[in-house]
Amino acid sequence: MIYLDNAATTFPKPPEVINAVNDILTNHGGNPGRGGHFFSRICGDKIFECRENMAKLIKADNPENIIFTKNATEAINLAIKGVVSRGDEIIISSMEHNSVLRSAVNMEKIGVTVKIAKADLSGYVSPQEIELLITDKTKMICVIHASNIVGTVNPIKEISHLARKHNIITLIDCAQTGGILPINAADFDMLAFAGHKGLYGPFGTGILYIRNGLNIDTLIEGGTGSFSESALMPLSSPDRYEAGTVNACGIAGLNEGIKFVLRENVYEKEKELSKRLKELLFNIKGIHVLGKNDVGVFGILFDNKDCVEAARILDEKYGIASRAGLHCAPMAHRTLGTISKGLLRLSVGYFNTIEDIERAALALEKIILYN
Amino acid sequence: MIATVASITSANRLKKCASESGIESSIAQTPHILTKEGCGYSLRFDEINIHKIQSCAYDLNIKIRGFFKEDTSGEKTTYIKI
Image (cartoon, each protein chain N blue to C red):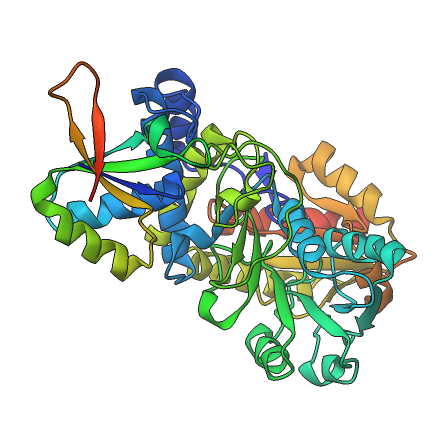
């Protein structure tokens, strides 16, 4: 099998990720931050190490600003619901995933106004387009770093600077870029990451970075192993946002995934693979590759083929894993003009080879010609 | 001696700083008698290093809730606030 669905989750994982998960479950399975015994302490050390490594990856100066969540979606929900309240306006881009769209729109029922900054046909969201929507009620701007459909990277630093000029909080959805593109936390208020994608961790892991001094509301409440006599959540991060037992084995695995991306140059590898894939795809008649593909995500539009059918044939006949449909981002498809047909997505990862890419391109060519 | 802090993450940060300064320390649950708000974590270290631990806390912007000397000479451990 050739795995080209790395934008959904990276696969395979580095062996050390699997070993770390196994090690916690086998040897150190005490509840971290809930006791003083050996098993709890060792497990707690792994959690802390992961916070430190993530902080190092995004150049955050304080590991206490790294909040563990179960995925990027939960991180995004925590950020949005923790910041906006009745009467506020939130600006999101038209390229957002449903993780942002649905959590923002859900806030309309409590009196929040959602405004959409339209991206261009490549999926690029300009700061100027966002600035047009800013009012004195704008509380938050949320933009996807790189499109999960076409890989177009947005000017997040400029957008954040614009927001700061207007005293607006920014949230950047880094689900497709964490571990791949360099990100400097100092430029942003909040950053959401998927642990199981470019950070090469296991499922069930996500991260929200919240800058120093920004205290937001909680998404869930419960035990934290600290300040237990109080009926209120502690004010200090990360405990404030991490009610309940954390996914210790997942985070131990994520720690190894982050160490892997700190060690390897994932972006350079993906760039090489993407370059080859782009060359090959652009020469195939009957398909169109949309967007800028700045990261290794390729949205492919067929002239005369159902994208889901193409994905099925790729899987069944050629042993190639891809993803077809709307990719949980209907608004982005409306922006790109592909809502009625959807797209086939090929997304590369560190463990792909040039041979994988060439076989996938050849398979696509054959599907268009013969199937 | 122990230094009580708000969270296990703060305790871990202090421990790391202590280790980088050549100080041996360990993380322990804060004795119940010392916690007004319930559960918490502390760093246990040799009293001689208190200034270095204070310096770490200052550098890392970690609030030490209290420094306590442990007296184990009696039937039960008593804690003296420094």
